[in-house]
Length: 79
Length: 520
Image 1 (cartoon, rainbow over the protein chains, first blue to last red):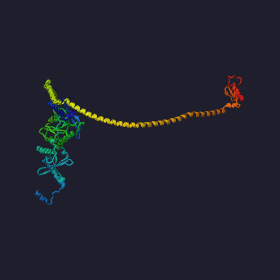
Image 2 (tube, helix red, strand yellow; image 1 turned 135 degrees about the horizontal axis):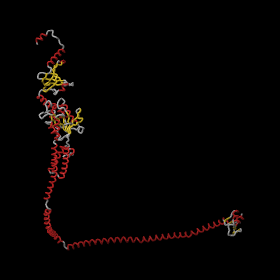
Image 3 (cartoon, each protein chain N blue to C red; image 1 turned 90 degrees about the horizontal axis):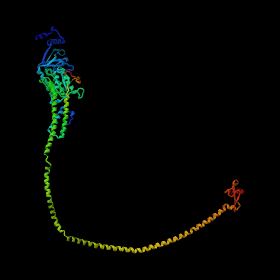
Image 4 (cartoon, rainbow over the protein chains, first blue to last red; image 1 turned 30 degrees about the horizontal axis):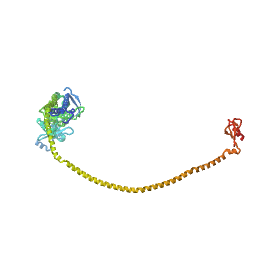
């Protein structure tokens, strides 16, 4: 698989990679030392995904536009 | 009427109008008669000069009426007349005297019924689809988990609240709302500008660029939603580089932006559901994957452990492995002793016939033949040696014969040489004896001559002639002063010395002085 650094992955990529790792491990035909490496990769992917899920803060802003361009934002109150 | 014209043919007293008077009279009649009319017809040729006024024709199958909308009226229109539209125009009739024209000033245009509006929509959709704006290939995938979501909608109302609530339920996100009018004359322009505005944001700028855009509006009449059918909105949605979800009206309402968007949501709430996954589901899925991961690696290790144990059990015992070879070894080592005996016997069988041939007489014959050959060689050697000795003796005799004369010659030469040498020696001896006597005679002669000269030159001879030498105190005195100082003087004559003065002889130096003095 393309070895994109885990930190650069989107949630979806990391999740797909994790599923692949789990699948490979469960198939049980990987050499033992590789399965340890796979496990470590899986753990890193899981941590990355968990970080993305944790990062779930609601923030609502209104765009201030001037001549069709967004020039700034103001917090949206009462929504 | 014909009667009237016939009557008027001859010059009568009917009043004469100027053209302007007549035009003005007509204008008044028309404006008075048709103060406010509604007319239904199809829009014909439309032109919009830079003045901003709108000129168009209203027509049916037989007649045409020119229509004008002034700039201010155009701005307020919900529906802009387009060629081919079936409309109901509301306005006032008037004339344009400059061209002998009558026309209608249209204040408002409405589409002539829902059917007509739908027909227009369909016509526009077909045209835009022909351009490829709705192609499936243009559709972009909606990101699985967008970080920032841009929402183009009215900031007030239920729509944005529905969206925000549903987002918060599923997966709270950063939402940027671009406020727009969702109906009315400005709707289309604002929505298009908002879509383009979101796309114009640079990644990493002060205002974050959304990963997803939702264009949303609640339900309404076809006319209310009309702005989302406008070409500028459709084109902006189609051009959007950011994936776009449209959620305009209710499920049954279809607007053209729905065709151009990457996904169409039946309601704003559904748009929020399309936009983000459910966080809890993801967490559960992730936990599930984590558990499977741990189980997987444990299983990988466990399976191998089991396999190892199984194999270890299947591994045969060591002695079982060696039994076979040991037996083979025993077999072959047992046969080894016998095999050696057999091999020796076989070799001996080959040796014996050869040994039989090896008898002593054979050896004696061999020796006799050798001896014979040796004697031959010895004889040959002897003869050769004798010849060689004879030759040597011969040469020796020759040399000996030459030796005696040579020797006597040598002896005679030596004798002669000795005689010569002896004669030379005698001569030299004679010369040697004579030489010192001659030398002595010469030297004696020279000595006599020198003695004579000495006696001539010495003062003794002078004394003999009558001179004397005065000495005072041992030294010769030559002056009177010296003689007076001397203690004693001594005068020497040719026949001896005479001491003078009272001084005892022991002061001999004083004795000389008077002698000297008297001399002078």
